Length: 169
Image (cartoon, rainbow, N blue to C red; front, side, top):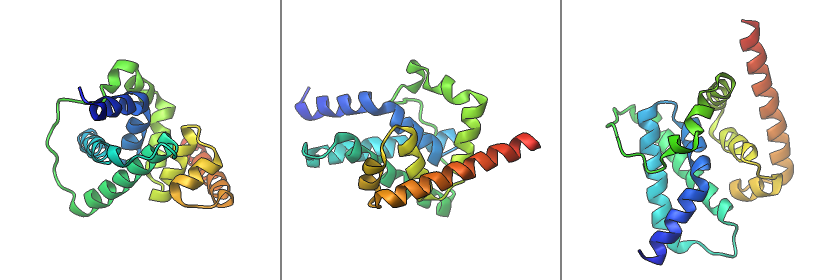
């Protein structure tokens, strides 16, 4: 196997949870999610030759995945196309228990509420939930650290209000 292919597989294995979370938030429909997953994987494959080791790998990967997710979301929102079932899931997410984790009621509800956010807010909260600090999020999204901090606080407040509204029902 070539160095290019080995590097690709290593990146995918190390970051499959991140890719899954991004696809889960941007595509609530399982079939659309598989399409987005494939688009992200294809774009990573195409872009791997341009990766500069001077930059943090996770920053590079977040940028690719989020840009593809936002583009996919915009396309699917406009087109509302039907999707073709894909049986071969490259990430094999179920193996590591991610699917079971997401099915937890509160986590599923969180994904639903995050899915209602605007694209930039989705990207910010995904990165935040993945453990990225304000500087990393700012770098990935081209914002100032102050702006990231302010937006995270607003997003958290919004999500908390949605949970509280849901509980009161």
